[in-house]
Amino acid sequence: DGGITQSPKYLFRKEGQNVTLSCEQNLNHDAMYWYRQDPGQGLRLIYYSQIVNDFQKGDIAEGYSVSREKKESFPLTVTSAQKNPTAFYLCASSIGGRNTGELFFGEGSRLTVL
Amino acid sequence: GQNIDQPTEMTATEGAIVQINCTYQTSGFNGLFWYQQHAGEAPTFLSYNVLDGLEEKGRFSSFLSRSKGYSYLLLKELQMKDSASYLCAVSPADRGSTLGRLYFGRGTQLTVWP
Image (cartoon, rainbow over all chains, first blue to last red; front, side, top):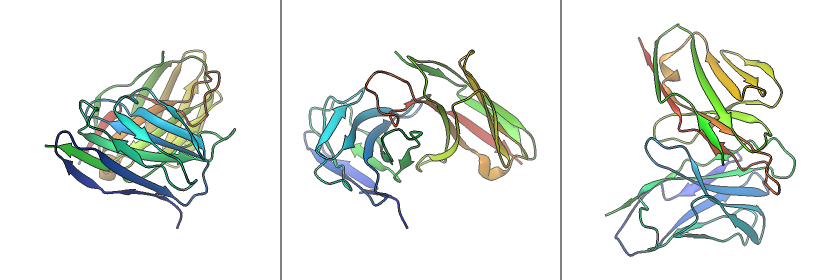
């Protein structure tokens, strides 16, 4: 079955450490996205990529980095520069191009900084 | 900027009908999405409206008025499993934006009581 796989589901990190969240999709989608969700707030876009080897900053990119070396993979690194990293992180993909923009989401990764 | 508003919380009883409203102000418009999100899980797609009017899908319907910047999600014959957060999201028509770049409201937490 096609879908999006995020790992790990839960992650604990000490302050000052970088951590990388994995996102893999087998939907053959061109576009991939990382959103952050905090209690009482809407999903906020961190980074997105419309094609391999290209990505753009979203609304809250500071303290994060991404890469898109393969169509299937879009890992997100939360660096020590991110001031408030504890959150629920959602990866999504869409067909891209002139489609409706429907997003397909992974199950999410919950990061807690101790 | 983009502004999307929806009520924070709503409650209803099993078997009832509930209407969740969403108003938006965005720089252009390429469609409006509704997603359902159960606690700790990924959002799942419910509906998409790009033209004015009502779209019906089983117990769920979604309405759009582009001139008023307004949409609603109508849930009929409520069931306990409908208790979830309902997210309104808009695809703007910014120059250079990808259609998958959605802006989300904060979500409406619906609680269905027996």
